[in-house]
Image (cartoon, rainbow, N blue to C red; front, top):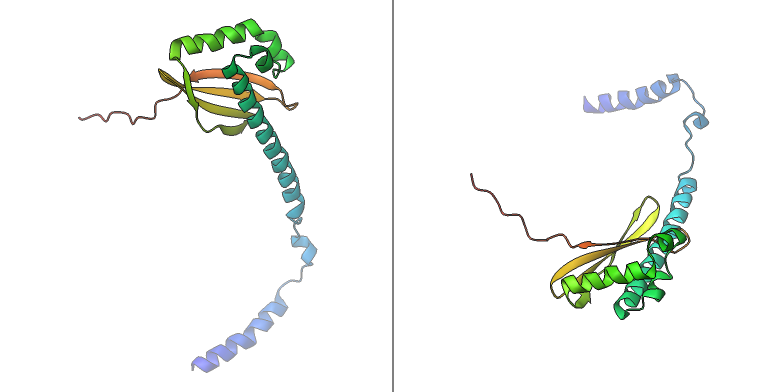
Length: 163
């Protein structure tokens, strides 16, 4: 009985396929994914290069600040940053941080993200009296378009409440 069912199924299948409406394969054709993938890969490579360059720039910028070479540090600013933060203001901010937090003891591992098409490098700074994070944002020309210092968020788990 099972053999008859298998034979009937095999005989009926070609007939059903023959009765199906014929359609040209191009009606279901989709573009090859390689064209979009190539564009995404090219964009990814360009972003990776910009991320790496911004990371190096942020590191050099912080080196110059740490050495006290404010003019060298501010030379990496784009025109908008230069107009907003002159050498005197940058020196004041950096010295104020040192006065508040003590001596810079170490730097943590920089973390880079892309935000609105621009790489942003966050570098933890460990001072004697507290931890801070600098954020350096680079523009498309490889200049510093933003610089920000903030206290590092606490990594301690919040206290649980008992009800």
